[in-house]
Image (cartoon, rainbow, N blue to C red; front, side, top):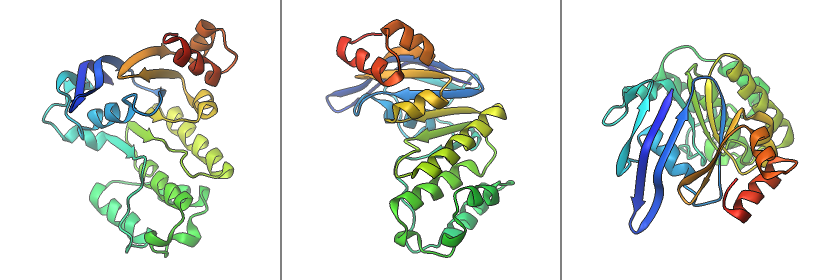
Length: 235
């Protein structure tokens, strides 16, 4: 589905992505992991066309995305920070996004799953951070697109909402969707991911299954395996 070939990206004197190559095949959950500053968000924004690489190529379904935008209609994106218009109600925001995107949605099921019924008439500026994240998740999952990109989706969620998020991800995976997730929560990644990609200083240090990574590092869980990479510099 996604091919990333020899991507470079520099911001000023800082080289954020360095000859990065990655192939994301159709269907499954792919967790992109790495410390702050490793290039995760830059990589995601490059796929979305929000950041233009200095060199290299990104292909979506076999076609380069350079100077193209229509492919984005096939992507649902959950940004790390939910910046909503503060004067709109949740209901008004949902209606606005529906009008912009078009097509059928599954908003009612997600509203019920995250207990958002009582917030629909509240102004977005008055919602807590956790409730805003639930709305963020609603807007991302209510449309039927083959690719979902989730940037730190667990931010601010309570344990019950975390369970609902995992169910949503599994539901989309069962439908054959491709899901890219960045997260700092290692047990969350270990539970949902079919494959993990670990970035460090703009380069891929590991690309494979959680089981493979634990075996290579001789560690019992993903958190310990990632710590081993950070300590030794390789998997």
